[in-house]
Image (cartoon, rainbow, N blue to C red; front, side, top):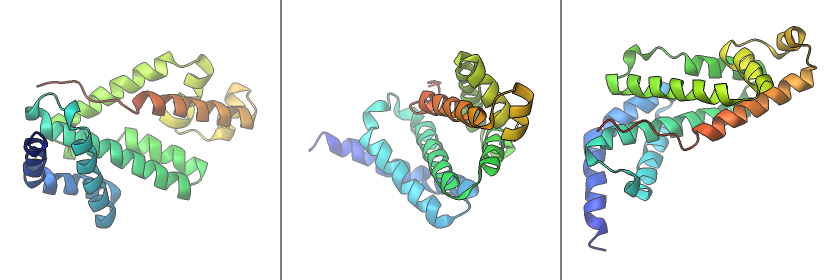
Amino acid sequence: MAETQPHIDMWRTAYEEYGSDLLAFLQHRVKSRHDAEDLLQETFVRVIRNGSKLRDPKRCRSYLFSTAHNLMVNFVTRKRESTMSRDEDVEFFTATLMLDDTSESPEEQTTRRELETRLKEIVGEMTPAHRQAFEMAVLQGKPYKEIAEQTGWSLSQVKINVYRARKTASEALRDWQPEDRG
């Protein structure tokens, strides 16, 4: 038990130091204080459980923000899936990728650029059909019907290709962490 106390103390200090910044970051993105507070709590639960993954305590802030960002994306995705139509889904995902990063810290901007670079690598590794579907539906925001007309695919084939491409990207990004700059 004595071994875990410094670990818990480190996260308690991190909460005191970064908690309000993380809450503001989350609330700005999910628009609900209640949801932001839940995500903040889940962020700390996750980092405490996975604390051994933090190799450099100096990177604590970055680790917290990356974890919070990933949880927020998962939260918004689940919420979106339960409330939005397919076209709104495409618009949301495109907007998420193209967010104005001027309100982000330089570290957050660097993390976003690393994520965008990783996403480009993932898209580049997709089959040609999945890559084309992802680029047209997700990155360009084209309606499925237009994609079908331009590619000659049936509407159901468009949906299948977009679904599989998104699944590939999601699975490849599931455990993604920004590069260690510490």
